[in-house]
Image 1 (cartoon, rainbow, N blue to C red):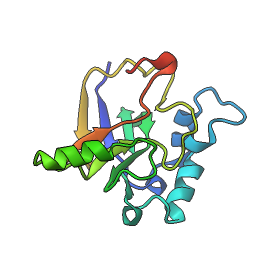
Image 2 (spheres, rainbow, N blue to C red):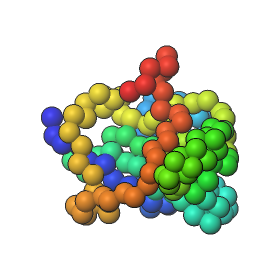
Image 3 (tube, rainbow, N blue to C red):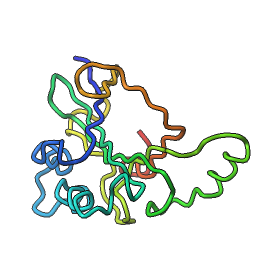
Image 4 (tube, helix red, strand yellow):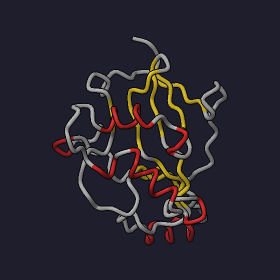
Length: 164
């Protein structure tokens, strides 16, 4: 099995729409979950709703093997906890009182919605194949350096409630 690599794709417009939607809808359903579609995420960003200015800087994650996307996650660098339906203000305040820095944090979710749907997007054969992952910040082989204090993936459950 070849090595998989993780790439932070930035804004959704920088990620191929057909590849993203293939991962979001691997069974080619007529009406897949609309909130995970490339067009929906693009509309949030292009309208100015999910941008760095509003505290939702897009840094979407792609897992690739041999240059082919095998998994994707809508991912945002957050400067606050609004609009994500996870009320972690108390955690942020407690962490600050203890001398920590809670923000910015990475938030793996679809902004502004509590709608249910598949949280991760993977090819049907890739869910447990990745045993070794190398991270490239710009997709060109440079190491990814992250200074975020928290990875908060509020919707990373697999079907049946198992977390993978």
